[in-house]
Image (cartoon, rainbow, N blue to C red; front, side, top):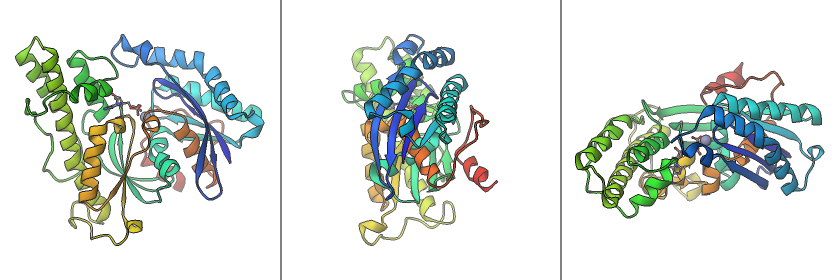
Length: 362
Ligand code: KG4
Ligand code: ZN
């Protein structure tokens, strides 16, 4: 089964072709991502109207390139999968309407894919991870722990009460005078900085549950920077390192609680999971989303996963940030279960993962 995937929910215009074999394994036939980063950089963040317009201008060419790279015409595909949300509505509309048009013209089924489900299922393409697994989804718009019980079956174990982790990185970078997107800049500078120089608050550490809060940390970082302004390069590197070390420690603490919750029927109860016999029985923690590209975060998650009897699976960097491979793959996973959508299916600015379970039941 070969699926064309289309992704336009934020600032990457992407198309890809992915094959799903009968044994459940997959193969990437083509993967085209056109980033709009430069168009938004001067504004310090993504401007929805500019993004939507750029998707309109670029998407045809991006799809043509993905088809050519795979050496296929529309007759050679089995379905079209397009992101239908959540995301910036103008961009989502561009991708979804394009997907509908191709599906109609080529007489192929349309799969309206939830962008978050795309991130959530990527590890099944790259690492053949079996259900159920625990997912930490950390991107510019989302920070959540989710129990992934199956395609369309998600239980939220924790989320952020204010900023998403990627958003916190971006805001921290902005107040340190670094460019957008901020995550990669902070990570680069943090390598040279002294993480112990600025003791920052560690929101929610030691508390029960797996929720996040990053807005107080951002304020503390701003105050620490203001106190020593004007900032030297050394100061900026030390602040970046202190910020990154703090958020990774927060994630460590929250992840330990999420793993306990995942392993225990009673939330917060039960203590650490029982010793696992054989690697086959080992529960899996998957990290996905743009922030999963952060090496310090990956190392911390690997550490805390081991300490709790889990193994960490982190998809390759290219598939952590937004792409259409994950949309094509999620489309294929839905299609084999007989799940596809009518041409009247709406674009949705908000579309929580947990709501997919109810839709299926309905
Ligand atoms: O998943 P993604 O590409 O787009 C969304 O769906 O949001 O995630 C983008 C986010 C941005 O906030 C960016 O700063 C962050 O991921 N990010 C990183 C790194 N690379 C990207 N954050 C920390 N460290 C990185 N290396
Ligand atoms: Zn994303």
